[in-house]
Length: 129
Image (cartoon, rainbow, N blue to C red; front, side):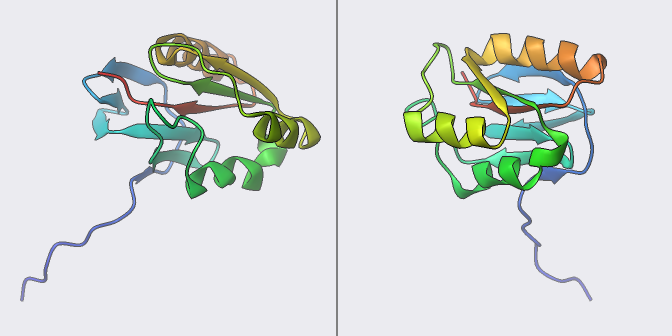
């Protein structure tokens, strides 16, 4: 017998380049996701960050859980560059992770290049329209 719809947290279990961004979401691995995403060694996750609050959300803590496999985090902060809050920048520094905030478009392009080079990179990408 059919059961109700099962709602799961957005997660793609693998590394994939970002094929497109805009219209409030991203395309990767022949799929699309509406909203912001975190691209980590363990996969691509939905993330609740927005242009007005680009550094929020419990899920951001997953970067620290995977710190052994990450040396660079690219923060795509929307259409404009936003500085990381000092406390967050310090936490990344103490974890040995370099953080680079930039526009979402620049972060997507840089992530794809670094991923293709096999570098230990993660990306926190805020969706843009």
